[in-house]
Length: 264
Image (cartoon, rainbow, N blue to C red):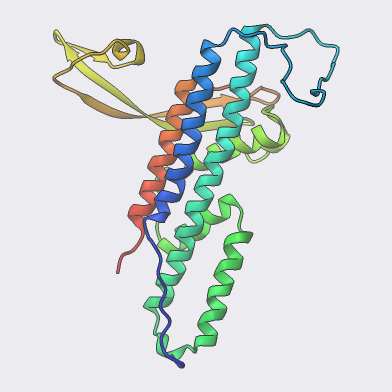
């Protein structure tokens, strides 16, 4: 290579850390909001204490009860959290795509390339990572890795659900099922189930089981595959356990992506 050497520094850990930091912020906020909602019995029709007149829309519909408004608020929060999951994974994809392309350039014979050639390649990589959509990243990264990424099917389904939540307010539309052989939207994820042995009986460790504190001297864990089906016109709904498992699925995926990165 002409004009000396080019030094590139990349923190490979960013492939998983970019998502992990986004996940931390999202789950911290959701945990706060969820617990606040659960303990709140305030008058939901009380207006914001703003200096100017607060916005009030009269849609002529009956006002929700405190219990109904709690669920509405939680659904809205989960929608925002799903958007954050995809944003966080996209950040990790950008780091992975950049690293894999830089690694490929490193493995080539750089003596046949000029500094100008390499700088053009770097510029193209930066343009690509701002141009690709979520599924594009998975396709391009798998091509560079020459192998599939574990949990790809689950992650793509999570992105499909996110699209429905964001673009169709959580009501399954024709766009959501147009590529489905079963004419529905299927959300897929994994969950970790934990058991302990008590008096010869396998007992699942649930929140109710452990909430008051428990000591166990044996523990077993199993990964469970889950699927939830939404038909046309169905309204997307998730509970807090499903949300937590989906967060775990995304975190596991980002760690698997990091594990597949080639090392020098």
